[in-house]
Amino acid sequence: MDIDLQSLDDKARYKLLMSSVVPRPIALITSLCQDGTVNAAPFSLFNIMSSSPPIVVVGIDTRETGFLKDTGRNIEANGEFVVNLVNEELSAQMNLCATGLPYGASEIDYASLEVTPSVQVAPPRIAKSPIGLECKLENALKIGNGRVIVIGRIVHYHIDDRYYDAEKQYVLSENIGLVARMHGRSWYARTSDLYELARPEAPVKA
Image (tube, rainbow, N blue to C red; front, side, top):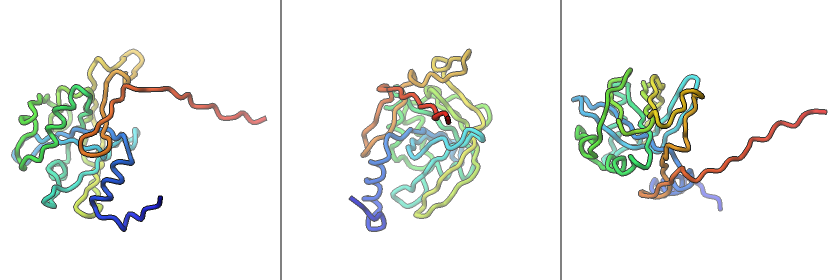
């Protein structure tokens, strides 16, 4: 089947694309409102785009009112945020942070989350998160319909000691239990069912 995306309305395009590009990692982003309130919101239009320089990219949508979501407003105003990765232990509280609270209300309080100070940015990180990425805004690309693509430079990295082999400098990814977004509003995937596929060597020329 071939589908011309321009023939679909916003809702149909969303359903098609968000159900196709799966699983998607989840960034539970903490940022600061103008009055200093800590905002926390999950985003699955997110990924690492480069390790040198260390860059993350997050797609931020609008609210139903048409205004940019609080996280986007805060990042544009303050230029700093923290990406907190989400494992299954944190997933229920992450889901509470998706509630559409009014601007200035703290999802941290609503979801009973504990935060801890960051090192190089003002927004705190979520203590329970297995990995935290402190970020500073590099650019915010306005792509139309009120949407913004945030490009952030990672300036500091946190990881729970349980998930890091300091001697080998390995992240023990298989032990973290990160979750990912799937289709629809309420479906998620675990990262516990893994398999290995060795990369083939390039053929040797005779």
